[in-house]
Amino acid sequence: MTQLQQAQSGKPLANLSLDLDNEWAYLKTHGDPAWESYPSYLDVVVPRILDVLTSRKLFITVFVVGQDAALEYNHSALAKIADAGHEIGNHSLRHEPWLHLFSENDLENELAEAEKHIQSATNKQPSGFRGPGYSQSPTMLQVLVWRGYAYDASSLPSFIGPLARAYYFATGKFDDEQRERLNRLFGSWKDGFRPLKPYYLRLGGVSLLEMPVTTFPIFRVPIHLSYVMYLAGFSTLLAKTYFSAALQACKLFNVEPSILLHPLDFLGGEDVPRLQFFPSMQLKKEQKVALVEYCLDSLIRNFDVRTVGEHAAIVATRENLPEVEPGN
Image (cartoon, rainbow, N blue to C red):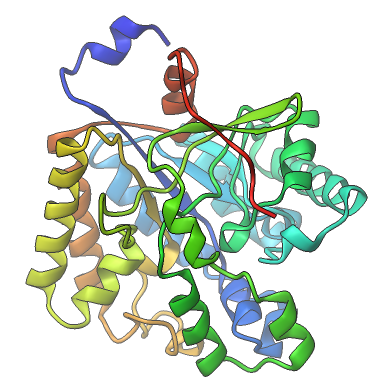
């Protein structure tokens, strides 16, 4: 992609992605043993997602969990995403938010197995990675580079990760061992000091482009759509105003936003009763889809929206990007 193509719209760049976390992944993070049967809502939510994107001619990055790609009953939904022209990324094999605890060998196996299943189900080889629960480590950086990834997108530069983790601990069913493994779920307060703009993760002679999930400039609170849905539980007007203000702040501070979606942004509590514990699931699916559409239309009006991979390819041509060591 050339700089001319980048500038044709006259708008600043943004990217849009979706972490395709399935019902079982939420149950697993919540400590509910029902996850072990791998319940799936992909046949319900994927057509809903594609309808919204196709009507706006949007192409995004969908980070797929390898375990879902390994199960034949999910293949039709995953093939529809790939056939629609969306970029496919790797969101790990088993959606375990404690990847930072994995050894080098375990991470190699995790990524290789996920890649195999994702490529088989979608006919696309992932070149981008996002860790579940924004999990990162120096070992992960090394393994991603060795496996030829073009970028990582696992950073959420926000101060409120510990609050989100406390909510999960308060509402979930965890023993002491599980709590220990989850003690970095959603990151630490120190992550709020990480850059909002793309940078290189560097460790020794190894480096990889990091495309952070954008948070509100200055305040560093999330602007991904699941947080917007949480605000909509109090007031739809509040949620819309908040998201619009966040986009204007991005323009003011020259931040090219990386906006994140999740399947639950398109699903109401009536679609997945077992996930009623999740914030915003009291909203009806019609309310949530309408709010997603409002936010995407606002994003399109203000920015030239690309996949994460397209955005990363443009960013990689720029000089003097900052370098940051990965967290432990």
